[in-house]
Amino acid sequence: MTRWQPDARERLERAAFDLFVEQGFASTTVPEIAARAGLSTRTFFRHFADKRDALFADEHAVPEQAARIVDEAPTGLGPLQIVASGFDAVASAQFAREKSYYILRQQIIQSDDGLRERQLRTQAALVEALRSGFVRRGSDPVDALLAAHLTATVFSVSIGRWLSAESTEPLAALLRDTFDRMVRTARP
Amino acid sequence: MTRWQPDARERLERAAFDLFVEQGFASTTVPEIAARAGLSTRTFFRHFADKRDALFADEHAVPEQAARIVDEAPTGLGPLQIVASGFDAVASAQFAREKSYYILRQQIIQSDDGLRERQLRTQAALVEALRSGFVRRGSDPVDALLAAHLTATVFSVSIGRWLSAESTEPLAALLRDTFDRMVRTARP
DNA sequence: TCTAGTGATGACACGCAGTGTCATCACGTG
DNA sequence: CACGTGATGACACTGCGTGTCATCACTAGA
Image 1 (tube, rainbow over the protein chains, first blue to last red):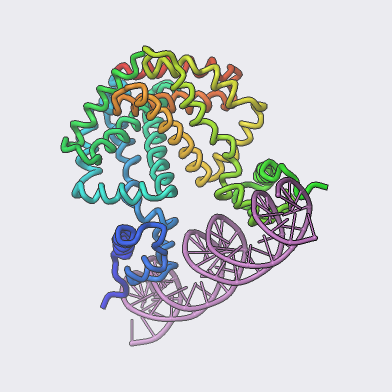
Image 2: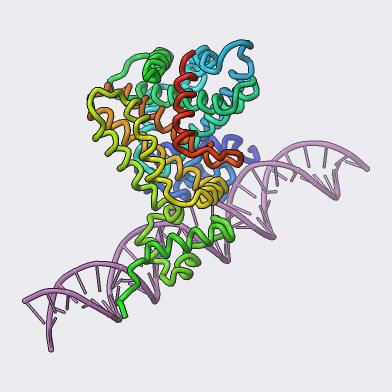
């Protein structure tokens, strides 16, 4: 016998996701999640800051990868050129699961105000990671912030298109298309 | 004698703001706010959805004004041209108080994760109001969403610059400058 | 082999956010 | 003078999130 199952966090994540799908986020309590994972309520809060956090465990890696891509880009490229060159890497690394998982997850998020706010916060974290990355490369602070916002917009809009009912295009193609459209839109 | 003071909501707003300034958002309880306003805890929650909401009472008007500006713009203008023409109106209407008030308010917001999330939500509401406004004018759905995001970025960045320590420029000028910089940044 | 950590967990108490429900009270209306 | 109305108060209750201490399996060192 081991002293404890070493995958407590993953069990909690999965139990939370399943319960949110089965009965909704609001009507799922933390004690329920913990019980399904075979753990106590207290242990849940040792792994996640709050109930919403169980749905956003993966997202913590996003700002890190963004910063890495920016830092490792060849010199001489502008912020938006760096971003455009990283589309494929991000599309494959951050969206490795089945598309149906992300659709289900997005449905849960859309069903609750608190979860929508939480998602906006992860996008804000991406903006900040990109901004500071661009500044490290020597960009003007305001230009860096603007480029970071533009980048986050491209990703947010592309993912929305990718998860929409009609779409069958791969994410990387949508990222490129959304990027081009944004460049065109920004010409007044 | 009146049966009750008719300005309950305003008293609660002011009491909340003052207490947040004096002792911080997290260490201020709703019963405290209600007591300072001379009301019960239950009444606080009749006026505001939650504790954070007392800091965002004004912001509910923002999406409405944005939608009105878009709807009343002359035909033939592109989304971003409409936005640029509305800079002065928004700067004067939505920021009528003393600048020191907005600085203080922003300090409170920055001090708490939940408040930052709440602010992101109001920005998302602005994006949605602009998006649907642009769609009503006949824009392509994706282009409308992109233009709405670009607009919200210009406002968010401009307000940040306006409230930053160094700045003395008027908000309308910063809006125009940020807009120009964004157009330039979006050229890869 | 004995012993003193160590790290994840459980158990329990607690403060506070937010809601449902009913009573109250001042007012307007017939 | 009786009745309805709308804002408020009082109270109970659920659930989130935290602080604190005990437990238990394992590990490193004497």
